[in-house]
Image (tube, rainbow, N blue to C red; front, side, top):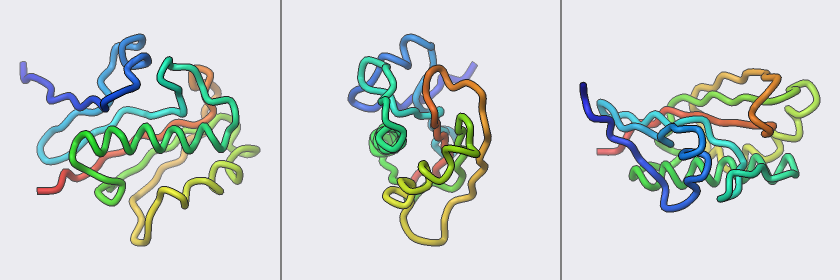
Length: 130
């Protein structure tokens, strides 16, 4: 079996340890990042939706940075939203703060009924710079 090349940010390990997953795995020039939520260091959700989205992006950016990447290296995005019909506009007011300029990465948005107490989750695939 191949050894996984896991990437961990300098902080925020509570959820990784509690749920037994790696924040990201390097493989064949790509970085596959697990879904990131707006969790505090202890794993609890940030209560305000816009702050939760910002924190999810900050948590994502910490992982990208730990792997030598930035959001500019992201090629594919999947977002999960609880009750997207009522939360999409609120969430999308925050996204441009982190998204960067066109051309944008691909995106798939998925409505979810449960995200372990969170309202927003983002997972990405990034091309690792050489």
